[in-house]
Image (cartoon, rainbow, N blue to C red; front, side, top):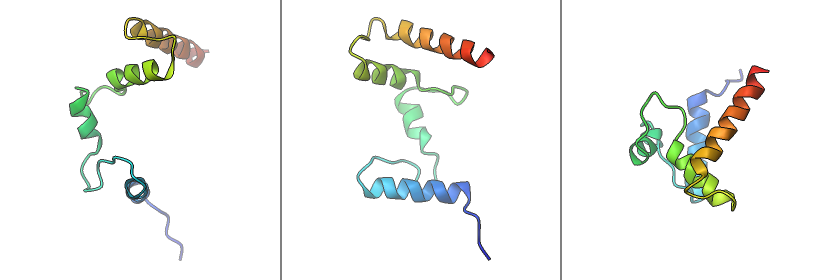
Length: 87
């Protein structure tokens, strides 16, 4: 009989593989891996997005965005996505 992989099993396998190829991983010990990022970026459990991390990456990936205008950029993108979702 074929067994269907569980979400947790797939997650552990993927984390193990990423760890093996040199990525920094959290949660292999069975703990909540996001806790490390929650603490580093002061994210509460009710927030879905790591806003500070998102801002860092937007600045790093887009030469037209800097620390002064990243908030405005992220807000504009969020508003645009909201309009698309609402049709």
